[in-house]
Length: 74
Image 1 (cartoon, one colour):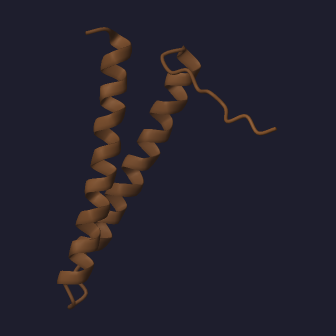
Image 2 (cartoon, helix red, strand yellow; image 1 turned 135 degrees about the vertical axis):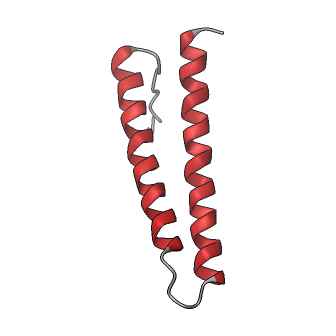
Image 3 (cartoon, one colour; image 1 turned 90 degrees about the horizontal axis):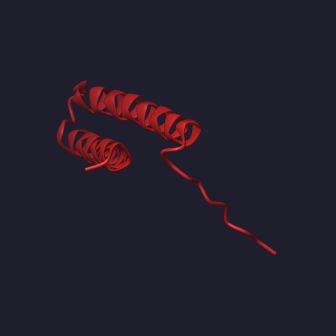
């Protein structure tokens, strides 16, 4: 497995973790009616993972591991 493929796999895993944390926060918000802090912590982790994902994408573009393409509108 090449480094580029491994890098893309890490990006996918981080993205799936962001989705998981979002679902976990929703579950905690619906389940814990007494004002538990579990939903806030899940959302905090989601924000941190989202920032990490954006940083990894920027690094990937700058190093040439990722090749963005534009959507061309005429």
